[in-house]
Image 1 (cartoon, one colour):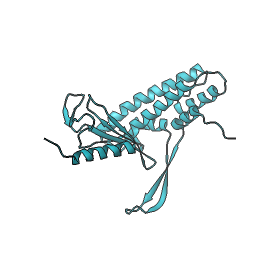
Image 2: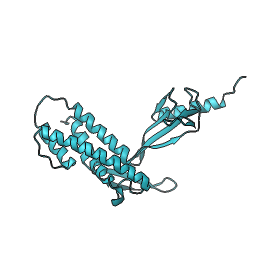
Image 3: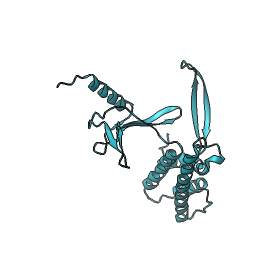
Image 4: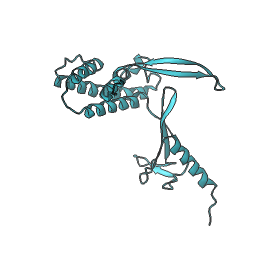
Amino acid sequence: MNERPNPLLAAIDTLTLPRIENIPQRTDDGVYIRTHTVTHPPLLEQLKAAINPSSNTASGSASLKSTRNLIDANAMFEYGKMSSAIGDWCLIWKVGVTRDPIVDLRRWYTKYSAYDHGNDPQFYIGQLNKWAAKIRNLIEPAIRYPVNITCPVCGSRTFTTEDGETNLFPILIEYRRQDGETIKPKATCRNDGCGAEWVGYDAIRELGEEVEERAQTPVNN
């Protein structure tokens, strides 16, 4: 009999276990050669390493100095918050705190899951998933680039930044890379009065087709 999936354990594993990435290697013509396997440290370990990226080869080490300093501060702040919260969970469940969040989180789960306490784990699942997303945003920020088109929803060709500056082309496309694949592609109109979104490959393709169709439609004076 297949065991039911455990979303709480899955969320903990995401933060505390290494991740194996299989990267296909191809020639310039796209012919498959072989698969290269890379093992990434646990997300919590990567976040700790990002606190001082200049002293390790983890994510961020090739960034500009100014960028590294910014990542240092954010990583230190977030790592401290997560470690403190995990320590609090351990104290509530009378689990000895080692100050290693990976060790503490897995020990907390062992104690927590040993009791049929009737507590809804959704709070913990939600918090752990938010941490994982936050770590990924810090160590592997989304790739973003503007598209030189007018928004087909609001018709705007410009948008205003938070600093009050007016920039051309409000549509911004962003996506992430994981396991050699493009994931979570999204286009957004940055015009405050619009905020239209196109999420996923199909939606972005439809956006491109709509823009192309409008460009080819003659304007009647």
